[in-house]
Length: 214
Image (cartoon, rainbow, N blue to C red; front, side, top):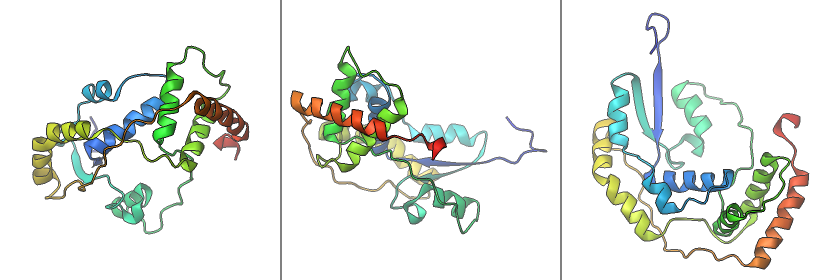
């Protein structure tokens, strides 16, 4: 892909536990679009065989692999990790904070129902809408959204063999963190809660200031 006389390319790839990755990416899909795809449909459409991926990329690039997990990252920060570990810059620039909290159980239930509505908000700014969703998720106490235990076990079983080879051949034995998952029931949002959240979102959208104007 590159003229080696001009460029020397080093690729650094961070791999995230498949359960965590699928949950996070699914929540972003629900949050940022109007899809009504179910968790099962989303998971079945995703292929996350990291070992095969690592083998293929290693054929073409000088590449190293690591695990994306805040407990492993320097200062728990991807920015600090990249600058300190890979660029040898001891004082990384301060990352600009942007409100982007993951949807909680209640806010997921709200946004999924919102996606199902034929008549949706007339949005002047999608960024303002997502800002409001994140702000409400940050203060909501309904708990983190997660897949049911059967789905989690199915994901882990699907990639167990591939991950074992990945850890051995590309990560020097480093492994994804073991996590304990609780079986949580889906949040059932009432009509009054849905309407209340919609009104709160409309108010928060008025407070939104685009980042380029800050």
